[in-house]
Length: 321
Image (cartoon, rainbow, N blue to C red; front, side):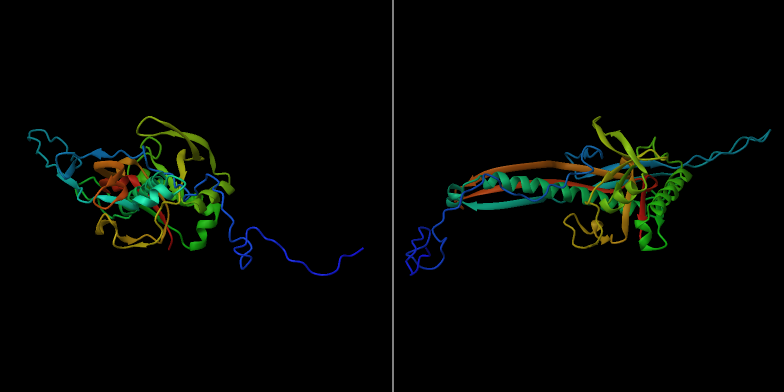
């Protein structure tokens, strides 16, 4: 038999029987802190970075090509001149990340915020380093001449699509690599023997997969570590998928104006460790410390390095028109 009439409800999670029925609910912490998605460094351990101590500048020297002649009987052979030049890299900037947490907040937070922040520092710095290397690789690929200027040293290698839509066509993308590697070999750069690696955007990577132009393979890093990866069939060059390749206009870069530029037309990069000269004075250092003056905990990370084009012949880029 139906019950008629009205009655008062008692809602134990309501404040004084008024307003939000869940006002007094105490949340339960799951124990999980959701950080940002880690962007794995694509260049770490692959690109050698020289330690720079006791100075701010590291240099490479270059020698130009030799000149041949023929011997004429009865005449002393003439001597030919040979060019020498130098390329320098100066490290003058410290990159840092810092967060400050009030003393009371550290005690009243039910997870270790300091640890989570330090993890985020590492992710951000890994992406920053990759992008700085890719910036200079892109610039090296587009150099018309070598920064050394010596005879026998040449510029970089590029292939430009006829249409922006070509980058989504597996056959046309594969042909772009064929053209690019032809340019490398015309400069006596062997794509396999000289340790070239393709750094592809995810869009480019999966376009190649659609045409089954990528097969399983591995490459050995500068530290001797074996890394499982995909290899471009027919060319045998490792392919690394990364979204750390800059594809925008960059200005006011923290490492200086040498890293500024328009990279919105970059589709993919191919280069060898020899393409770049990189040096580091302060490796990545992280610290968590309490400061009595500010009555706060500080989470600090910093490093000091730089990179510049070295041998453009070992760098290539696929570009949009």
